[in-house]
Image 1 (cartoon, rainbow, N blue to C red):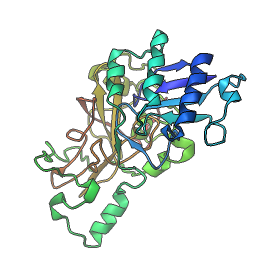
Image 2 (image 1 turned 180 degrees about the vertical axis):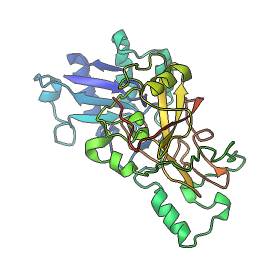
Image 3 (image 1 turned 90 degrees about the vertical axis):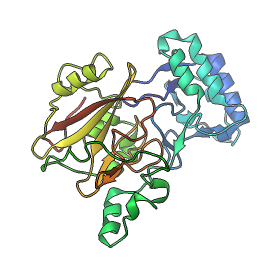
Image 4 (image 1 turned 135 degrees about the vertical axis):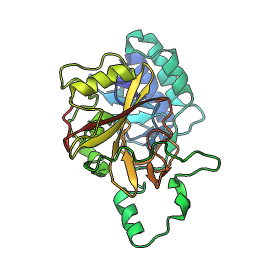
Length: 327
């Protein structure tokens, strides 16, 4: 029995549905005809932007169905979980697979989500190869030139004609922030698929793929708005003002759909931010491939970086812990 997950949200649970035996058989036949469309659920060769990241297919029950009977065109059994939609194709299996959701209205795939998915998957530079804040600062300490924040290759936080001025730059500095650029920890195989954006922002390996603000505090966010999710943050102990030795995070919202978080991971003079889109790798780059850092008030921060559909900027929040527990 195969379950399909529309991988589109960062914090909220993704829509899922279970294929019928007929649909399962057709899926196996389609990917056997073009196995190049299959990719691992998580791989260093692919980094995804916020929003649509393809469809995850996983075995949820061994029932002797079509998947058990057939093998793929490359002569081995299909993995128990894989991704469809991140590879270019003349006849995309992802389009057909997404269409099967129409037979399952309870899955929660509506016209807005289908429209977002119809634009396809946007891949950006792999987070496994992205500039690491620690190595970046080390290079600068060795005398590498700043060059006006230009010349950083794929990570240049500057585009011709782009606005790289950060309004209120570095005002989040509380003189007592806690910093930890630890994307690599959250990207370990045992953690990457089991912790979402809120887990990373809170620096808590909670093993809660859909951790929700307020759930641990007994008042989970019920409306996906700035006000609704902020109330959940308050229940979990987050504050509006600076806290001693505290975490600093930013909340953004895809209106009425989803929430996403960024965490401040280094201090001055280079203020780096990291984030983790859903169950995909944590990174220090935005949807356009810019490294999210700023120097002397120039560069990118969560309020002016590429965020896709997460258009509502809800503000900065603080907690006086190196790890804020979530659930």
